[in-house]
Length: 410
Image (tube, rainbow, N blue to C red; front, top):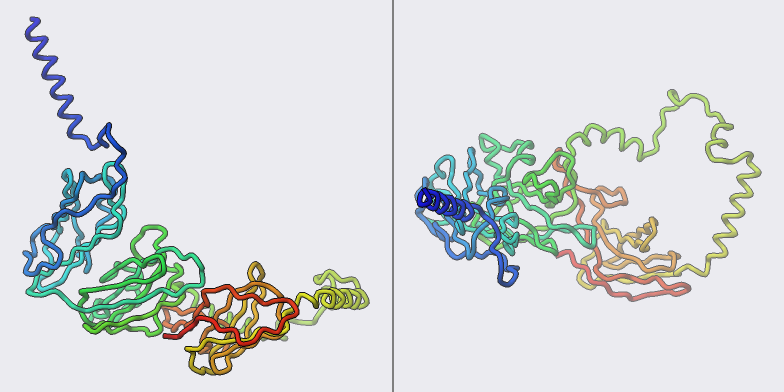
């Protein structure tokens, strides 16, 4: 009886040990692991050709991988209709297509920062494994940069959509809001790069994927190039992406918005003007009171005359003359904006508040005097601009001339 009891206890302990080993958990003891997992090997290897369309992709890491979040960390471009199944076996990540890979196609397997080891250390940077089911890899290339107004911009997701994917060799605007043909992530300064692409025409858009949806949503702020369509070739090419709008509903209100900006009033609908109501809305009690308020404002303005920079003039050596260029000075911490026309690559602001501020220029293509964002649907090209990286100081009672700033269009 005692022997049976001992055997039963031994079996129970062995079963418990096996169950413990089967569960993923951080190893105990020893120094704290803060190193991110690294790729030790992959099958197929990066750059391999003639891969079996039915083969799974296996990536071996330097340490065990956490199952949690592994599936969400994997993307395949061009995307498969039925997607892929992702499994974790100790230090191996296995990516199996739910349908065979297409023949004679270059695929990009991207493993993002959601992939972690058992200590929750994420991979240091996105892992890219590119292979071809044909005899050679694609060789198209595209580099670029995202140009934003924010001094500290978030990393952006940059997406390419092959135009032929819209059907019958055309383009469907709904494609902007679907999974892309290729995708990459910008770095901390907005730069991005694509390599080993299939050559041809693409639409390009970038956005901050704050909801981790992996695709653009209607209404998201985004960035678009100056040209509607970008032709990717084997030759090096660099593009810039500027602020744009993706809200397709905004187009419906464009006519009303233009009318409001122009200040047009339908007098037939407006009816008679009630002067008493106007004064009440302004908070005034009589024309005399309005005059007193104007005099007080004039006195206040005169008292602050000493806080004026009489002239701020300068330019950038590398700019070519452009009659559409406008310069904008923005005092830091204030809502005021001062805009002047360009003069052969130079600017001249007269009588602006003494302050430290930022300086930028933009090309006013539509002639409305302000920077206009692009639009995806219907397409409208963004106006290009450049924000001078250094802070500018407009000193009180000074006439500053010959100021040279960094700013180039190329």
